[in-house]
Image (cartoon, rainbow, N blue to C red):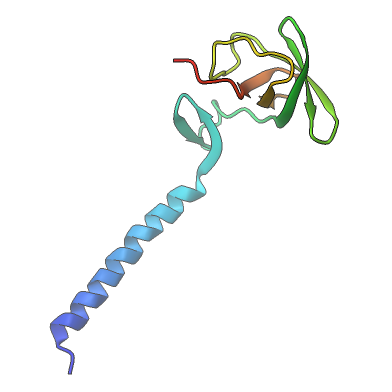
Length: 120
């Protein structure tokens, strides 16, 4: 026969585990994939969240601050990259490099990440 202390102990542990997992599940609902400065922000941070189109492809043309990226589908996307654009590297991107960018509705790149090494 199982002692009453063991039954109460197992039920208490199960209750505490479920209580802890529910808070994790609730906070996971608020996460977004956008990152800026190492902070994962949620849709509650509306003033910092900028909607945009994700562009993934190869740089085919550079004209000053304007870049043309060819996606895998063959579509070419023109975007403007300047000092306000989030970048991982201070190196100048070159034609032929792969890029993952987020572009707003006006054609400005919010983020522009290439396959170059990260600059510290």
